[in-house]
Length: 129
Image (cartoon, helix red, strand yellow):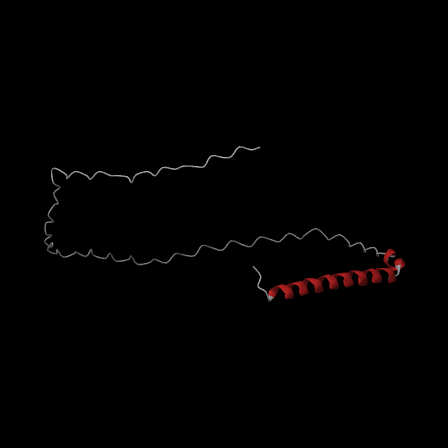
């Protein structure tokens, strides 16, 4: 929702936009009438492009001689890392958690009592004449 201060400025903006669009349209119309009609119809002749002579057949490039395969250097083997042994730790004693016991007989649930339902008396519609 626009506040009280924004409404007059918005109306002023809309009014200025309407006036500027109207003046732009009339200025464009005047320019169209003032432009010479013959200048837009004449087109300069496009000169024909000179024909390019066909290129000669591509020269076959001789294949390069095969390079002999270089010897592969021998790489030393990676030494095996011995498997580390994990020292045995004593297991901590876990205390026993007592199990909760449910009573064999559950107490009886209370009865749910709803409040009394009020009586409604609607007025009878009057007969239409």
